Image (cartoon, rainbow over all chains, first blue to last red; front, side, top):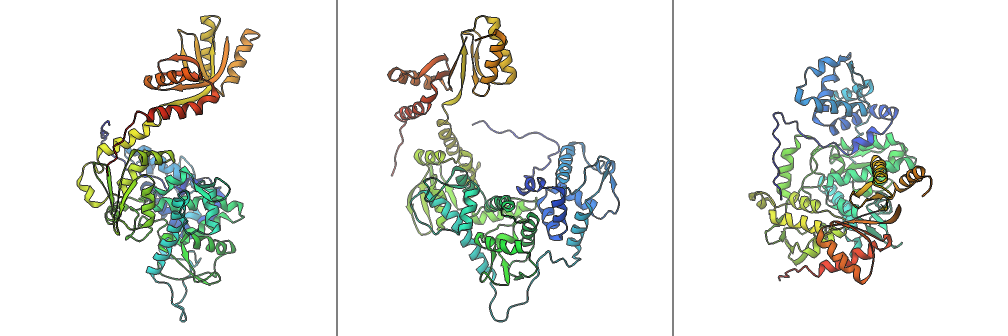
Length: 483
Length: 66
């Protein structure tokens, strides 16, 4: 395996992976976004989703009354950081936070007032949720119950996905969830009866819970338009949830019709808890309150190797979180010892490991050629297996450098390459040209169209793609008068 | 000049030789291009892939430890 050499740069501009919701927001119209920015909680949540540079720029411009000239702002930028600065500006323009202008920089006024309100706590739009008084008759849910509820709902969904193809009969999540899974391409109806997991479903299982949650929510947003739900209402409700306090109850009174309908769906995903469907109060769970933050969305005693870093300060949280949550030990003899009793994690490991023994707190298995090939056949890639093992590595493994034994990593990649020994492409073989000049002329034309897959000057033939055939044939017919 | 419809296979030399051997029993190759490429009949691709995999499996051994 070639050794990766570190790039030698003087200024290292930190790489920040953009949040998956941002492209969706950027595809919305300006009116939609402006309506969204009228609510301070939405402004704050979107602010949290952005990268460090964008956030700094917004904070710089937030309290200015008039526009700032672009030249003044760019004077603050180091030459090495110019690319990062430009891309940050593009992101902001895409979200209509800052109108695109080369001369002046100013924030969208709605966004500006919304964010100011969010920070200074002014206004009474109720966009951060209206908390209710303690209900004297019934006990409200405490944090442990909420966590248990969220975990149970979430794991039901994942467990259903994992064991769908393997003959076990786990509890089914609700109809709405099944529909969502089908629409997002994570499962599909193979034989008309039960749902089977697809290869993108397998990849989904190996992601962190934060990514999984946002993946499903994005699907939900895409479907919102078809179900005639106002997108702005849906988004603002999600953002309101993400700013709520864990363990407090909130009233359903100020919610719109769309948002009340959403409550039922969100209950199924484990984002909110309601005593019963007609209840006038609801409580957000940890899954909801950590939507836009970098803390782990599920309680730390369980699986999950830390959530996606939404900002740089997540680095500390990630390492300490993962240290509590890593549970896999991988040895150089391909044996895996997983210190877990969680059936979902065992099921996920079963996807690419041959299980050997199972104890109350330990699962022992081996990475064999068959098990890895089975996983590769299901659409999981070698990189995903390796990154899953790395993310959930037991703290003991951190003594090793690199974390996973190189032999095992290489072997998993080799098993993947074994499957790709033969590549194929459909198309047409053109041969028996009348003369060399003829051949070169047609070949040049085909190359212009970029349809040549293989050529041989000595044999005077070449292979072109299926799509290009019509064009090449037309060209030849025009040239020679008739074929 | 002629245009023949087919599937272009790109592989390493060893796999190509295996394919040529398979071809003698059940012909599917239209043309042998060079050391790394073959053109085969379009509808035979699936069958060829399956037989190739079976052939390669014969050469792999795994040590089952207990």
